[in-house]
Image (cartoon, rainbow, N blue to C red):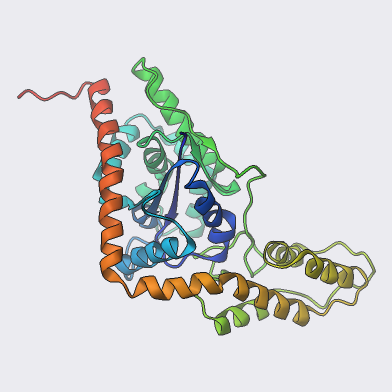
Length: 330
């Protein structure tokens, strides 16, 4: 059975983009693959070095993973910082990661522009930690969005480099897992890029109905098309992209026809979109409240996940240390 690994950064709530782009597919995958799902709390420090409440952010993501349908009995669901073997492998891989190649990664250049006062070493070596996360479990496949494809290629590069340097065929070269279709990203409500926590343009799984309606009604639109069959601007396409996923085909077609005929009323479109998002998220929202109140269950899940992840990670790290030449004298 092939091994699949994926992680979500622990910077707060999971948003609609996380769910539609990946998590709902994780739920299906866990019955057909050996799945590892982790909460990337170390990764979150690259952009939030002084988090307001790291522990509760991690807890919230754990709750929402479970509410969305991840089964800790079927999969290995764990918190990154509960597996110290990851950071040791990260250290070893860093010894063979070069400054020039790290500086050229798109994710580093983008983040360096966004946070010029916090261009830290962790941000620079983000692809190395990501590689350690993946190859420590010898993952065959990794579900990634378009923005992470380059980092996945870096993980393959570090795996190859280790194998070549030590003349072994030890690490696999992980491939993108795109659920049988093109890698996608869910757009944000502000009309720019993908939906994300840092951008503040997302709808979160824990949002109540009033918050969802308010956010969608404030989504970027314009005065509407002037000529029939006009090309949609990107921020309008974004709303239709979300609608195509959460609404019925006839609903989508109705509003596309209204746009084409210059009769579109964005207020009506947004109201419909909000109700369809609420309908989709209602079962998850209910489960979030139930699971959030059961601290004993959350503790059990986190402990079980750490034990399962460390069993795999410790075996890999021991073998890596032996390949490199680290051996005890006693």
